[in-house]
Length: 121
Image (tube, rainbow, N blue to C red; front, side, top):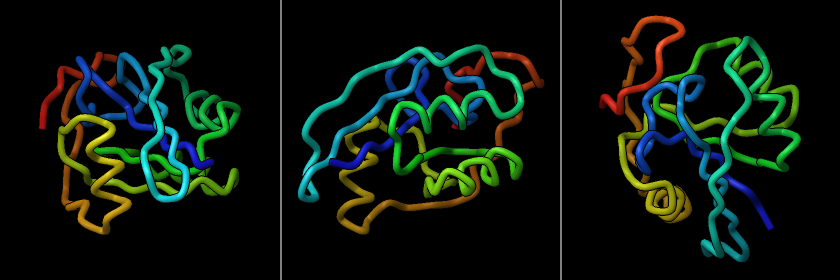
C-alpha cells in the first residue's frame, strides 16, 4: 500500500502545500486508488509539514508549488515530490499520476507568506 499526500483547499489541490486547509491522504494498492482520508496539518512552520507527512506514512506528494527546503526535507525521508500539478480533486490527480498522464507545469504560489491558500491556480 502506498500513500499519496495532496494539499487541498475546499476539496481541490491548493497551489501552496504549506498553507493548505487539509491534506488528502490517498491510498493506492496495485496501481488502483483504494480510498482517501482528509487530515488537518499542524500549523505551518519550516519543516513541520514534511515531517508530519512522513509520520503519516506518505510515500509521494503531489503539489502545485513548493519551496526547495521542503523538497529537500521530503528527500531525506525518501518521499517523492511531484510539483506543478493543477487544481483538481486529489483522487483524480493520483489517478492521472498512476496512468502517466499528470500534466506538470509552473504553478507558483503568489499569496503573501503566512496567509492561507485561496485556491488560486
